[in-house]
Image (spheres, rainbow, N blue to C red):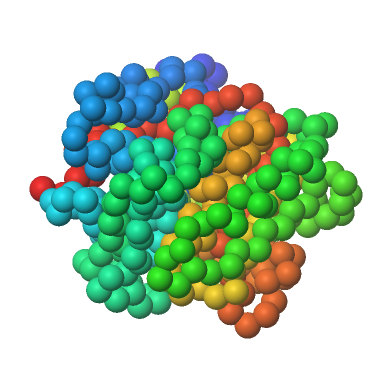
Length: 419
């Protein structure tokens, strides 16, 4: 494909000079990077074209046939798979072959070795799944007895093929329904700009903090401490959070192996989204058109000084500036059981936020354990008061009010079931 000569060629927005074809393709690809940067944490949704219907059909809830199925396991899974997951990888595998029991495994092909090298976030994502499963079980009058790592916990470095949990389901008239169940189909991560003029009220914050307490006992339950900084604490407190988040985001954008990890799970346009139903979704019409023409190259990372990178940093900083509050969750340790339970706690916090109309977006970059993030990692731990030996910030998130967004894609229910 030939481009017309200057002056009709596109102009470099940084230097004001005509672009050659190679430069244009690089900028276009970088522009797409700029667009996906909102998604690099956990996926883009709500763009101009909208999500293909089949990719978000799970958010309508189980159909009538599934609700009447004598085997309740699939009905429970239809809610559990709506849990938040890092990069929307959906690495859950459920074995339903033993009656009255669900065994949860991790799909080892759906991990993040570059940005989550110790798989802490993956384990938290299994915790979110288990919490939604427990809520659904209670809705059906079942007690879910969850045993974590029944064949032993993974080491601190790598996951393996052993199960994450076994869940035994027992009819129990004393199993109380949890009001947070009603929020599962409404819970969506919101990565848009927030309303900086609207503070999160004390009653909503109290409900979110209190939501961690009812986590059902597991083999080794752990304590989660919730903290918050908002408009009431003043501009300096908010600025400290924004500075760390911005720097951590810049690092993830400019380290080639970490941004390429996002490229690997980027789904551009409705056809790719419908085919995969996972990962980071991008439906911006211009990028979809360029991708169709073969002009969006996902095989190379943009340079640190590319317009794509610098413009995305500016865009993300604007969203941080629109944020009226930041919430964090700290645990006294960081073993695998603690990580799973922290995920369960986060699921409950976000469901409680949803009940109060509060939007949330995880800020995972500064919590990641790869070498380049050591500075922001130390800074957010200090800011959150996680200074005692072993204390770990498991979650850090923007909180506020924003316009509703579409849900993220979900794979078919049968894709999660081991046969």
